[in-house]
Image 1 (cartoon, helix red, strand yellow):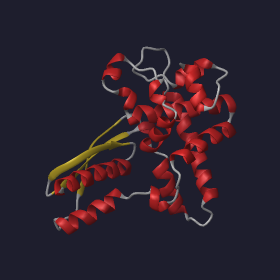
Image 2 (cartoon, rainbow, N blue to C red):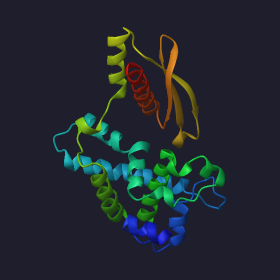
Image 3 (cartoon, helix red, strand yellow):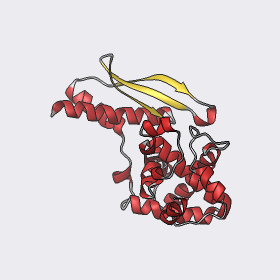
Length: 224
C-alpha cells in the first residue's frame, strides 16, 4: 500500500517509519501521529508557495500576494492537492473516524498532506518538497491569478443581502478551541438576528469566509 502511495507521490522514502508517521492520524492507536510533521509541513509549504508567487507575479504588491497565498495555503487548498495523490486511501485512522467518513474529511486530508511534505523536507530537503508541491499545485490549478483564485465571499454576501434585504450580515464568534499555534474558530453568519450558516476555520477570517460561502449557497438555493 505504501509503495503504491509513493508511486503516486513521485517520491520514495528511505525511512518508511517517517512516512507511516506522516500518514497516521491522532485517532489511530499508535505511539506517534502526524501532528508534529503537519506543523513543520505547514511552515515549509507557506514558504514554498510564497516564493513561487513572488517570482510568478513580479508586479503584484504585498496585499495581492498575501491574498493569493491565503487562497492556496489553507485547508481547502491542501485537501485538493491531497486528492491528487489519493492520500485519503492511505491514512491510518481509527475505526470510529473511518465510520465518520474520515478519509474524505478536508481537515484530515489537508493535515496528512502537510505532514507528508514535512517528512520529505526532513529526509530530502527544501528543493525536493518544492518540486513535488509545485508540480501538484500547477496540475490542480491550471490558472493561478487573483481573479480565478481569490474569492471574497464576505463581500459577495454583503452585496447580495444589501440588494435583496437592505441589511448587512453580521458575524458572531461562537467558539475558539485548541492550543495557540493551532486554534480553531467557529463563526456564525446572521441576518436580522437569525443564524444563516456556521463554519470553522484556523483563523477568524478563514471561518468568516467559509461561513459567508455557505450562507451564499443557502440564500441562492432559496431563490431557485
